Image 1 (cartoon, one colour):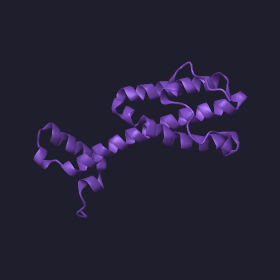
Image 2 (spheres, helix red, strand yellow):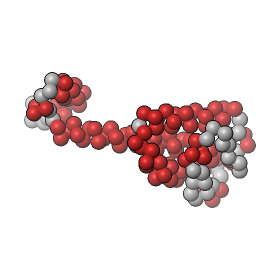
Image 3 (tube, helix red, strand yellow):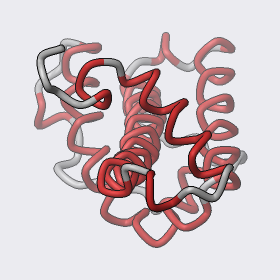
Image 4 (cartoon, one colour):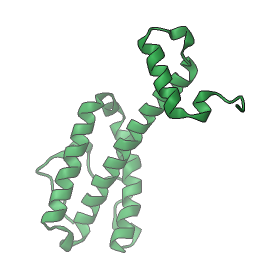
Length: 146
């Protein structure tokens, strides 16, 4: 062997080994440092996933405001689905709710650029900052006007 750890050589095998050690109560044999890193990484992935879901919803809402052809049943269905996915996601990871203001602001900047590309409209067409509150954009009766 090259002397590298199982963690470096075969992540899947390492993960299964660590799970078995933890279940057996053999904490002294577990790779605690890497386990902690992986748990933190899982938390960051959850945050990125919420950011991406917010980005998609915001992009759809922005396009909705500018393209009358976008205001059809399929777009309405997509926006409704986006809202439900975010709602389910927050139910599974409610501690991310305290980060919503920052995540919405970051997701909006990305969604704005996406909307520019999607519509071909000038960036100045869309507000520089998110014009909707989280609660507003999640409200199933909310359909923004141009």
